[in-house]
Length: 351
Image (cartoon, rainbow, N blue to C red):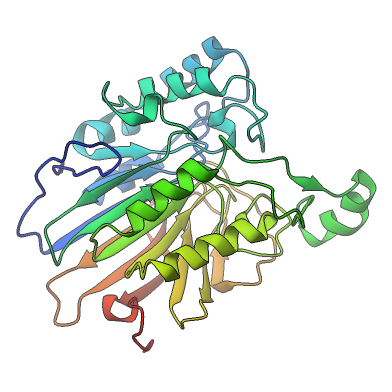
Protein backbone atom coordinates (compact mmCIF):
# COMPACT_ATOMS: atom_id res chain seq x y z
CA UNK A 1 0.00 0.00 0.00
CA UNK A 2 1.10 3.58 -0.51
CA UNK A 3 1.03 6.05 2.35
CA UNK A 4 1.27 9.83 2.24
CA UNK A 5 4.72 10.98 3.24
CA UNK A 6 6.24 13.87 5.15
CA UNK A 7 9.78 14.47 3.99
CA UNK A 8 11.80 16.85 6.15
CA UNK A 9 14.49 17.20 3.49
CA UNK A 10 11.85 18.89 1.30
CA UNK A 11 10.36 22.04 2.75
CA UNK A 12 6.72 21.34 1.84
CA UNK A 13 5.09 18.81 4.17
CA UNK A 14 2.41 16.37 3.04
CA UNK A 15 -0.30 15.12 5.43
CA UNK A 16 0.51 12.07 7.56
CA UNK A 17 -1.59 8.92 7.56
CA UNK A 18 -3.83 8.63 10.61
CA UNK A 19 -5.00 5.83 12.84
CA UNK A 20 -2.44 3.21 11.83
CA UNK A 21 -2.07 0.28 14.21
CA UNK A 22 1.18 -0.92 12.63
CA UNK A 23 3.87 0.27 10.26
CA UNK A 24 5.98 -2.01 8.07
CA UNK A 25 9.30 -1.01 6.54
CA UNK A 26 11.12 -3.44 4.27
CA UNK A 27 14.62 -2.79 2.98
CA UNK A 28 17.48 -4.38 1.11
CA UNK A 29 20.68 -3.77 -0.81
CA UNK A 30 22.98 -5.30 -3.41
CA UNK A 31 20.78 -6.22 -6.38
CA UNK A 32 22.77 -7.14 -9.48
CA UNK A 33 20.62 -6.11 -12.39
CA UNK A 34 21.89 -8.93 -14.66
CA UNK A 35 20.78 -11.69 -12.26
CA UNK A 36 17.42 -13.29 -11.65
CA UNK A 37 15.63 -11.56 -8.76
CA UNK A 38 12.97 -13.93 -7.39
CA UNK A 39 13.14 -12.25 -3.97
CA UNK A 40 10.74 -9.48 -5.03
CA UNK A 41 7.79 -11.89 -4.86
CA UNK A 42 8.35 -12.46 -1.14
CA UNK A 43 8.89 -8.75 -0.50
CA UNK A 44 5.64 -7.88 -2.28
CA UNK A 45 3.80 -10.51 -0.24
CA UNK A 46 4.77 -8.60 2.93
CA UNK A 47 2.75 -5.60 1.66
CA UNK A 48 5.18 -3.15 3.25
CA UNK A 49 4.20 0.45 3.71
CA UNK A 50 7.64 1.47 2.46
CA UNK A 51 10.55 -0.28 0.75
CA UNK A 52 13.99 1.31 1.15
CA UNK A 53 16.85 0.46 -1.19
CA UNK A 54 20.11 1.02 0.70
CA UNK A 55 22.64 0.97 -2.10
CA UNK A 56 24.30 -1.16 -4.74
CA UNK A 57 20.84 -1.02 -6.25
CA UNK A 58 22.62 -1.78 -9.52
CA UNK A 59 26.24 -2.69 -10.20
CA UNK A 60 27.14 0.26 -12.38
CA UNK A 61 30.92 0.50 -11.89
CA UNK A 62 31.51 2.88 -14.75
CA UNK A 63 32.23 6.48 -15.66
CA UNK A 64 30.05 6.09 -18.76
CA UNK A 65 26.58 7.39 -17.91
CA UNK A 66 25.02 5.60 -20.86
CA UNK A 67 26.17 2.32 -19.31
CA UNK A 68 24.87 3.37 -15.91
CA UNK A 69 21.46 4.30 -17.35
CA UNK A 70 21.21 1.02 -19.27
CA UNK A 71 21.76 -0.87 -16.02
CA UNK A 72 19.09 1.17 -14.24
CA UNK A 73 16.75 0.46 -17.14
CA UNK A 74 17.47 -3.25 -16.78
CA UNK A 75 16.53 -3.12 -13.08
CA UNK A 76 13.40 -1.19 -13.95
CA UNK A 77 12.27 -4.01 -16.25
CA UNK A 78 12.62 -6.74 -13.59
CA UNK A 79 8.96 -7.78 -13.20
CA UNK A 80 8.97 -8.10 -9.40
CA UNK A 81 10.71 -4.78 -8.91
CA UNK A 82 8.44 -3.03 -11.41
CA UNK A 83 5.37 -4.37 -9.59
CA UNK A 84 6.70 -3.36 -6.18
CA UNK A 85 7.32 0.24 -7.18
CA UNK A 86 3.71 0.47 -8.42
CA UNK A 87 2.32 -0.92 -5.15
CA UNK A 88 4.59 0.51 -2.49
CA UNK A 89 6.32 3.74 -1.50
CA UNK A 90 9.89 3.24 -2.78
CA UNK A 91 12.81 5.29 -1.42
CA UNK A 92 16.52 4.88 -2.06
CA UNK A 93 20.10 5.88 -1.29
CA UNK A 94 23.23 4.72 -3.09
CA UNK A 95 26.39 2.88 -2.13
CA UNK A 96 29.58 2.48 -4.14
CA UNK A 97 28.55 0.37 -7.15
CA UNK A 98 25.56 2.51 -8.11
CA UNK A 99 27.52 5.63 -7.21
CA UNK A 100 29.85 4.48 -9.96
CA UNK A 101 32.99 2.75 -8.68
CA UNK A 102 33.89 0.06 -6.15
CA UNK A 103 34.69 1.58 -2.74
CA UNK A 104 34.78 5.09 -4.24
CA UNK A 105 34.44 8.34 -2.34
CA UNK A 106 34.77 12.01 -3.21
CA UNK A 107 37.39 11.30 -5.89
CA UNK A 108 34.88 9.66 -8.27
CA UNK A 109 34.89 12.14 -11.18
CA UNK A 110 31.34 11.57 -12.45
CA UNK A 111 29.40 11.96 -9.21
CA UNK A 112 27.29 14.89 -10.44
CA UNK A 113 26.27 12.96 -13.55
CA UNK A 114 25.67 9.83 -11.49
CA UNK A 115 23.44 11.79 -9.10
CA UNK A 116 21.31 12.87 -12.06
CA UNK A 117 20.97 9.28 -13.33
CA UNK A 118 20.08 8.01 -9.85
CA UNK A 119 17.45 10.65 -9.15
CA UNK A 120 15.90 10.29 -12.58
CA UNK A 121 15.54 6.54 -12.16
CA UNK A 122 14.04 6.83 -8.68
CA UNK A 123 11.66 9.57 -9.88
CA UNK A 124 12.77 12.25 -7.47
CA UNK A 125 10.44 15.27 -7.58
CA UNK A 126 11.78 18.18 -9.60
CA UNK A 127 11.69 20.52 -6.60
CA UNK A 128 13.64 18.17 -4.32
CA UNK A 129 16.83 19.55 -2.73
CA UNK A 130 18.57 16.28 -3.61
CA UNK A 131 19.24 17.51 -7.14
CA UNK A 132 21.55 20.33 -6.06
CA UNK A 133 22.19 20.26 -2.30
CA UNK A 134 25.74 20.37 -0.97
CA UNK A 135 27.19 17.03 0.09
CA UNK A 136 25.19 14.49 -1.89
CA UNK A 137 21.77 12.84 -2.06
CA UNK A 138 20.98 12.39 1.65
CA UNK A 139 17.32 12.78 2.57
CA UNK A 140 14.69 11.84 5.16
CA UNK A 141 11.03 10.80 5.32
CA UNK A 142 8.50 10.68 8.12
CA UNK A 143 5.23 8.76 8.29
CA UNK A 144 2.49 8.85 10.89
CA UNK A 145 0.86 10.98 13.53
CA UNK A 146 2.20 12.05 16.93
CA UNK A 147 2.75 8.98 19.10
CA UNK A 148 3.00 6.74 16.03
CA UNK A 149 5.58 8.58 13.97
CA UNK A 150 8.38 6.77 12.12
CA UNK A 151 11.30 8.63 10.58
CA UNK A 152 13.76 7.27 8.02
CA UNK A 153 17.06 9.12 7.50
CA UNK A 154 19.10 8.11 4.44
CA UNK A 155 22.78 9.09 4.66
CA UNK A 156 25.12 9.66 1.71
CA UNK A 157 28.47 8.07 2.64
CA UNK A 158 30.05 8.56 -0.82
CA UNK A 159 29.93 12.17 -1.97
CA UNK A 160 32.42 13.66 0.53
CA UNK A 161 34.21 10.58 1.84
CA UNK A 162 38.00 10.77 1.93
CA UNK A 163 40.17 7.88 0.64
CA UNK A 164 40.40 4.65 2.63
CA UNK A 165 43.59 3.42 4.30
CA UNK A 166 44.65 0.08 2.80
CA UNK A 167 47.12 -2.55 3.91
CA UNK A 168 49.71 -3.82 1.41
CA UNK A 169 48.78 -6.54 -1.07
CA UNK A 170 51.19 -8.87 0.73
CA UNK A 171 49.64 -8.24 4.13
CA UNK A 172 46.20 -8.72 2.70
CA UNK A 173 47.13 -12.03 1.07
CA UNK A 174 49.02 -13.42 4.06
CA UNK A 175 47.13 -12.03 7.06
CA UNK A 176 43.73 -10.68 6.08
CA UNK A 177 42.38 -13.01 3.44
CA UNK A 178 42.89 -16.19 5.51
CA UNK A 179 40.75 -14.61 8.25
CA UNK A 180 38.04 -13.54 5.77
CA UNK A 181 38.92 -9.90 6.42
CA UNK A 182 39.09 -6.96 4.04
CA UNK A 183 42.08 -4.72 3.20
CA UNK A 184 41.17 -1.55 5.12
CA UNK A 185 42.42 -0.11 8.40
CA UNK A 186 40.94 2.67 10.54
CA UNK A 187 42.55 6.04 9.91
CA UNK A 188 44.21 8.03 12.69
CA UNK A 189 43.67 11.27 10.77
CA UNK A 190 40.91 13.06 12.68
CA UNK A 191 40.52 15.60 9.86
CA UNK A 192 39.41 12.95 7.37
CA UNK A 193 35.78 13.03 6.34
CA UNK A 194 32.96 10.54 5.97
CA UNK A 195 29.92 12.72 5.24
CA UNK A 196 30.94 16.40 5.36
CA UNK A 197 29.79 19.42 7.36
CA UNK A 198 26.67 20.21 5.33
CA UNK A 199 25.33 16.73 5.92
CA UNK A 200 26.28 16.79 9.61
CA UNK A 201 24.31 20.03 10.13
CA UNK A 202 21.35 18.60 8.25
CA UNK A 203 21.52 15.35 10.27
CA UNK A 204 21.41 17.23 13.57
CA UNK A 205 18.29 19.01 12.36
CA UNK A 206 16.72 15.67 11.47
CA UNK A 207 17.52 14.11 14.84
CA UNK A 208 15.77 17.02 16.55
CA UNK A 209 12.57 16.42 14.59
CA UNK A 210 9.77 14.70 16.54
CA UNK A 211 9.67 10.93 15.95
CA UNK A 212 8.75 7.90 18.04
CA UNK A 213 10.97 5.55 16.04
CA UNK A 214 13.76 6.77 13.78
CA UNK A 215 15.88 4.69 11.45
CA UNK A 216 19.28 6.00 10.37
CA UNK A 217 20.20 4.14 7.19
CA UNK A 218 23.70 3.94 5.73
CA UNK A 219 24.90 2.07 2.66
CA UNK A 220 27.83 0.74 4.70
CA UNK A 221 27.79 -0.67 8.23
CA UNK A 222 27.98 1.75 11.15
CA UNK A 223 28.56 -0.39 14.25
CA UNK A 224 30.69 -3.24 12.90
CA UNK A 225 34.38 -3.39 13.76
CA UNK A 226 37.06 -5.84 12.71
CA UNK A 227 35.75 -6.79 9.27
CA UNK A 228 38.49 -4.97 7.36
CA UNK A 229 35.92 -3.93 4.76
CA UNK A 230 34.24 -0.60 4.22
CA UNK A 231 32.50 0.63 7.38
CA UNK A 232 32.19 3.72 9.55
CA UNK A 233 34.82 2.15 11.81
CA UNK A 234 37.43 3.09 9.17
CA UNK A 235 36.75 6.69 10.25
CA UNK A 236 36.50 6.19 14.03
CA UNK A 237 36.28 9.91 14.80
CA UNK A 238 33.30 10.27 12.42
CA UNK A 239 31.64 7.20 13.90
CA UNK A 240 32.11 8.63 17.38
CA UNK A 241 30.71 11.95 16.21
CA UNK A 242 27.58 10.13 15.08
CA UNK A 243 27.25 8.41 18.47
CA UNK A 244 27.77 11.73 20.26
CA UNK A 245 25.17 13.43 18.08
CA UNK A 246 22.57 10.75 18.79
CA UNK A 247 23.22 11.21 22.50
CA UNK A 248 23.37 15.01 22.54
CA UNK A 249 20.07 15.31 20.65
CA UNK A 250 18.44 12.59 22.81
CA UNK A 251 17.21 11.01 19.58
CA UNK A 252 14.90 8.47 21.19
CA UNK A 253 13.84 5.43 19.19
CA UNK A 254 16.97 5.34 17.04
CA UNK A 255 17.82 2.10 15.20
CA UNK A 256 20.50 1.77 12.50
CA UNK A 257 20.04 0.07 9.13
CA UNK A 258 22.70 -0.84 6.57
CA UNK A 259 23.63 -2.99 3.58
CA UNK A 260 26.78 -3.64 1.47
CA UNK A 261 28.27 -6.74 3.11
CA UNK A 262 26.63 -9.60 1.14
CA UNK A 263 25.58 -11.11 4.45
CA UNK A 264 22.99 -10.13 7.06
CA UNK A 265 23.43 -9.69 10.80
CA UNK A 266 22.57 -7.74 13.94
CA UNK A 267 25.12 -5.54 15.71
CA UNK A 268 24.76 -3.70 18.99
CA UNK A 269 26.72 -1.26 21.14
CA UNK A 270 25.79 0.51 24.36
CA UNK A 271 26.42 4.24 24.29
CA UNK A 272 27.95 5.95 27.38
CA UNK A 273 24.49 7.04 28.48
CA UNK A 274 23.42 3.40 28.50
CA UNK A 275 21.36 3.73 25.32
CA UNK A 276 21.24 0.39 23.43
CA UNK A 277 22.10 1.13 19.80
CA UNK A 278 21.06 -1.68 17.45
CA UNK A 279 21.95 -2.12 13.78
CA UNK A 280 20.31 -4.47 11.30
CA UNK A 281 22.30 -5.19 8.14
CA UNK A 282 20.54 -6.73 5.13
CA UNK A 283 22.57 -7.79 2.08
CA UNK A 284 22.09 -8.84 -0.56
CA UNK A 285 18.94 -9.06 -2.63
CA UNK A 286 20.95 -11.13 -5.13
CA UNK A 287 24.55 -11.10 -3.85
CA UNK A 288 25.90 -13.74 -1.43
CA UNK A 289 29.23 -14.01 0.41
CA UNK A 290 30.01 -17.31 2.09
CA UNK A 291 33.07 -16.04 3.96
CA UNK A 292 31.41 -13.91 6.63
CA UNK A 293 33.97 -11.59 8.21
CA UNK A 294 34.49 -11.06 11.96
CA UNK A 295 32.55 -8.29 13.71
CA UNK A 296 33.27 -7.31 17.31
CA UNK A 297 29.69 -6.14 17.85
CA UNK A 298 27.74 -8.96 16.22
CA UNK A 299 24.69 -10.24 18.09
CA UNK A 300 23.64 -13.79 17.24
CA UNK A 301 24.32 -15.52 13.96
CA UNK A 302 24.48 -14.41 10.34
CA UNK A 303 23.04 -15.48 7.01
CA UNK A 304 24.72 -15.02 3.64
CA UNK A 305 21.91 -16.28 1.41
CA UNK A 306 19.86 -13.73 -0.55
CA UNK A 307 17.80 -11.77 1.95
CA UNK A 308 15.79 -8.68 2.80
CA UNK A 309 15.12 -6.81 6.02
CA UNK A 310 11.64 -6.41 7.46
CA UNK A 311 10.65 -4.17 10.37
CA UNK A 312 7.17 -4.15 11.86
CA UNK A 313 6.13 -1.61 14.47
CA UNK A 314 3.10 -2.52 16.57
CA UNK A 315 1.96 0.84 17.89
CA UNK A 316 -1.16 -0.40 19.65
CA UNK A 317 0.28 -3.26 21.71
CA UNK A 318 0.04 -2.75 25.50
CA UNK A 319 3.81 -2.21 25.33
CA UNK A 320 4.53 -0.99 21.76
CA UNK A 321 7.42 -2.81 20.11
CA UNK A 322 9.22 -3.34 16.84
CA UNK A 323 10.21 -6.67 15.33
CA UNK A 324 13.32 -6.65 13.16
CA UNK A 325 13.75 -9.63 10.86
CA UNK A 326 15.95 -10.93 8.09
CA UNK A 327 14.06 -13.13 5.64
CA UNK A 328 15.30 -15.27 2.77
CA UNK A 329 14.03 -15.15 -0.79
CA UNK A 330 11.18 -17.49 0.17
CA UNK A 331 10.06 -15.15 2.95
CA UNK A 332 11.27 -17.38 5.78
CA UNK A 333 12.75 -15.79 8.91
CA UNK A 334 16.52 -16.31 9.22
CA UNK A 335 17.32 -14.05 12.18
CA UNK A 336 15.05 -11.87 14.29
CA UNK A 337 14.91 -9.64 17.35
CA UNK A 338 12.01 -7.88 19.07
CA UNK A 339 12.67 -4.60 20.89
CA UNK A 340 10.35 -2.67 23.17
CA UNK A 341 10.07 0.96 22.13
CA UNK A 342 10.28 1.86 25.83
CA UNK A 343 13.81 0.42 25.85
CA UNK A 344 14.90 2.84 23.12
CA UNK A 345 14.68 5.92 25.31
CA UNK A 346 17.45 8.03 26.80
CA UNK A 347 17.59 8.12 30.59
CA UNK A 348 15.56 4.92 30.62
CA UNK A 349 17.03 1.57 31.74
CA UNK A 350 17.22 -1.23 29.21
CA UNK A 351 15.11 -4.22 30.13
